[in-house]
Image 1 (cartoon, rainbow, N blue to C red):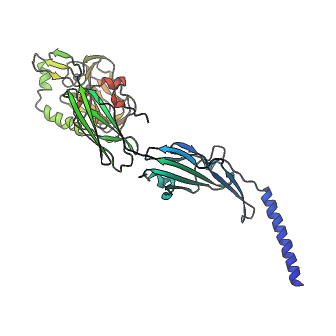
Image 2 (image 1 turned 135 degrees about the horizontal axis):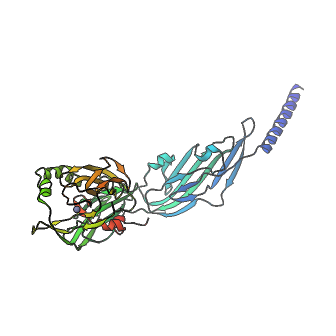
Length: 433
Ligand SMILES: [Zn+2]
């Protein structure tokens, strides 16, 4: 008797509870919101499945809503670079304020031919490098914790792609004129080490453009002997070779006189060679492994070109000419001198031969030189932007009147500024990807 009554009570209790759960289930709403915006290897991918769950009152049970995408895993096609960035942006603008960042667990897993090659967080993935070509699958799981505005959610993304990475080595040209600059672009592919370069034309180094991409600038000296010269690049143990045919440039002649007093104070100063060697020539050996600029070089000041680049100069009837390795821009003393491009100030001081002298490093050993200035307004070590005022035009050092001597060099090689100004230089080599 007693047992039967107990069962009846339990049965009624269970029914009441079930009714309460059913009522709670019916009245609980699941707030879905938008899935996180995911961009993998530059392509937007959509979740294949989204699971939303909202706890019922009491917290023991939850109401689930599963949304399946009509599409299966995203096919990203053929990918040819070794770095495939993962970007997870937000859960959409209209969701809760805190939801613009991923707060829950995020897990990316990668398989090559069904064998797992990576599993970890986006931070761990940033350090991962692909090392083999083949057919890949990827699964990405993003958890969104529930809050007062959104239900808890798990978004599952699937991707597939074929990886076919090869090192890319591109030479901007196989020809150059004296005074030109050539570029060599490298995408190192799976190679673990940075590429290396050797040339018969002058020292060049590779500057990193991204984790896999590099650029090197090759100087063609203004007086480079004409003929064929080699550039050798090595990437991941493979050698790439390119011959460069160097052709001539036409240079003018100039005859001038310069006073004995000026010559004695500068070119004949016994301290001149040592000062030049220790303060300027040392810079020919320095190469910053960073590209500081991304816009074209500009003329440092307005004015008539009083002495052209590369010109043969006959001074005081001396039958042996000197060469003019930059351009002279005649301008009134006090005219502002602007940085031709962004860079690092590697020299700003009075030099016996060249007076108040500023030298800027733009990266990869590419430097611009500013001579004979009246004043200097930058100091060594400054990182400056294109167009920064370096000082003013003057006539200090070995100079006969107010002008700016402007020179472009890579290492010890003097180069033509004109193609840098007009944008036609292969310094601006654009590989198009
Ligand atoms: Zn000059």
